[in-house]
Length: 129
Image 1 (tube, rainbow, N blue to C red):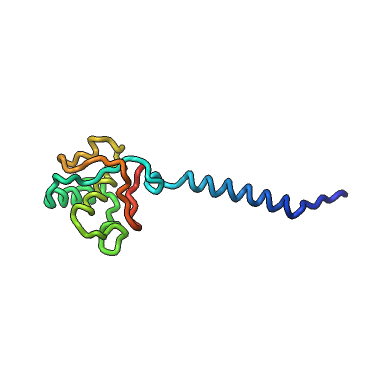
Image 2 (cartoon, rainbow, N blue to C red):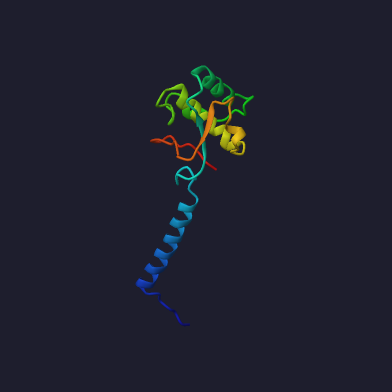
């Protein structure tokens, strides 16, 4: 019986090759938001706090699809800054992304706008599919 021993340099080469492929595959699977590519829907400057609060209430309800709005609740990664406009932007983007990301899905009675710059900040990540 012949036994071959793989040398240490060859073993190290295969380890590095597999590790590199694994890291590259992981990086390709990052969300588009993390890569700063895509389109997002946020509150425009025309919407009043009353209109934007209505958007939050609707998007985060069963009627609006009961999106997971926990991120904008106290202690959530998107609670700060604690403004109606910021919270509405996050909720509106959830709705927009989950329903096809069309211009019509970002209208919100003329209070939404599509943007091409990632509005994510700190640990608050706005998804983009």
